[in-house]
Length: 127
Image 1 (cartoon, rainbow, N blue to C red):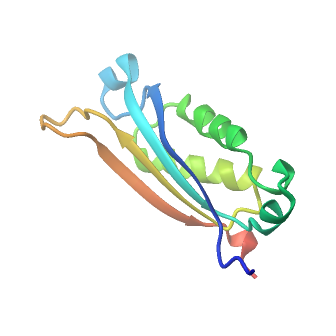
Image 2: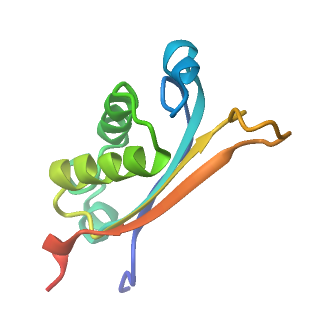
């Protein structure tokens, strides 16, 4: 058997955080949802059944949680910071797709949220 590609996904990570351009968003905060998909080589994890051969979900969550603690004006900036932190901690990651959704954004519309998705490539893993 040959593994063509491997992905780890964390879906629906929920946070209360203080991101936004408006001053009130920085004071009261709001609800945010983070979804991510990481492309990485999972061959050894499949073969050995050993957590040291993969990316630890708990560590991924801690990275995202820590980035959520630092306010940003823009979701774009926040998602980019998450990517940088993930690539720094897990240099074996090949790609990362991260979506940050702000629930109930202050724009006068009935919506489930406004979101930004970045698909990031780890240049260090390209041969």
